[in-house]
Length: 473
Image (cartoon, rainbow, N blue to C red; front, side, top):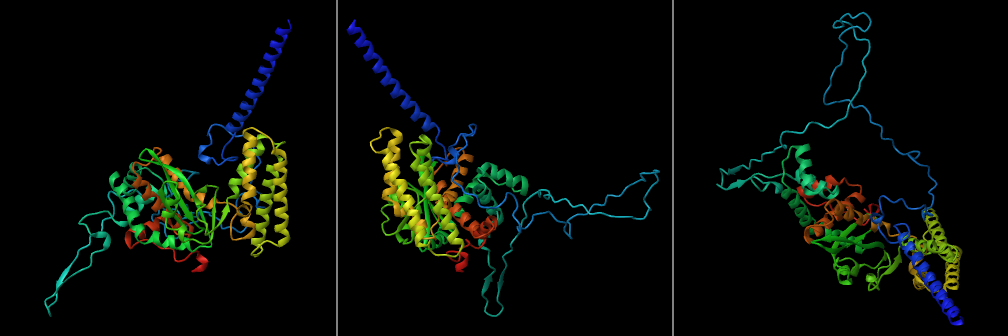
C-alpha cells in the first residue's frame, strides 16, 4: 500500500510539474501572439487587418492642438473663376405661374454656378512637329542645320511630359505598368505599351545616376545629423535589402544584402562624420568614426513588450518608458525655446530616473528564468551598455528622438511591393525604383511638385537640391 501511495504522489508531482511547464509555455505563446507593431519591431503592414488589437497605452504625447483645421491655417474652399472655359445659359421657357412664354421677358436676376471637372480625353496626344531646317550661307557656302531638341532625337517618339506621367503613375502612385498604361490611354488618349512604361523607369534611373545621386550623397555625407534604416523587398524570388540614408530634406536609397560592405557601398557613411540616427541593428557598429543615436520609438516598443508580458513584475519597463517620454518632451520644449542643449540639472534628473529604472529592473529580474525574464535582462543590458547612444537626443538637441524619418522614406517600397504582386521581377527593377524614389522623396521634401520634377528630368535634366537645407541656400 505504501508503495502505491508513493507512486501516486510521484505521479501527482510529475503531473503538477508538467502542468506548470505547459502553463508557462501557453503564457509565452499568448505573449508572442499579442505582439504587433505597437509593442515590437514588426511593421504596421504585418498587423492582421481583421483583428482589432486590444487598446494599449500609446507612446505618443498630446500636442495641445485641437482636432481638425487649426486656427490661422488657410482654407481650401472652391471659389468661382472669372474666365470659365465654357458658359451654358439655363433660361426658363415658360412662366411658372400662368404658363406664358418668357422668350422676350426681361431678366430679373442671374446667378453663377460653376462646375470644376476634367476635360474630355483627346483622341490622341498633343503632337508637336519639329522641322529641322538647314540653310547654306551665301557668303562662304557653309551649310548649318537647326538644333534638334534633346528629347526629340527620333523621328517619332513620346515626349518628356508623357514619359514623366508614366514614371509618376508607376513610381509615385505605385501602379503596375499595365494599369499605368491603361490610365494614360484613357485620360490622355496615349495608347502606350506596358514596355514603354517599364522602359521609362529605367530611363529615369539612368538619368538620375548621372547627377542627382552623387549630389545627394555628397550633401548627406556633410550633414550634422542623418538617418539610416533598411528593409526587405522581394526581387527575382528572393529577399533583398533596400537601404535608406536621409535627412529632413534629402533621401538616397540603394539595394543589396545587409552586410557592412553593402552599407558602405551606398557611398555616404564612410565619409559621414556627424550623428547617425538608427535602430539597434549591429551592421552599423563598424562606423566607429561617427556618433550613434538609438531610435527611441524602437526602444519604447521593446519596453512595452516586456511590460505587457508581466505588468506587475516588469514595472521598471514602464518607468523607463516614462523617463524616455519625459526626456523627449523636455528636449522638444528646449528646442522650441531656442536652446542648444538641455540645462545641466535637467540632464541630471533624466539620468537619475534612467539609472533608477535600470536598478529596479535588475533587482526584479536577477535569478529569474524564462522567455520573458530573458528578454527583460537582454533589454536591461542594452540600456546599461548604450546609455549615451540612447540619450543622445538629450545631449544634442539637433538629434531627433526617433528614426521615423528613415522609416517613412522606406515605406513606398512596401506599398509598391503590395501593388506589384509581392515582388519585383528583376533586381535591376528594384534598384531603379530605389533611385527614382530617392528623387521623388527629395523633391517632395523641398516642396517641389513631383510631376514637375519628373518633367524637368526628361526635358533638361534632373532637378538638384541646391543645399543641405532650404535655410542654407
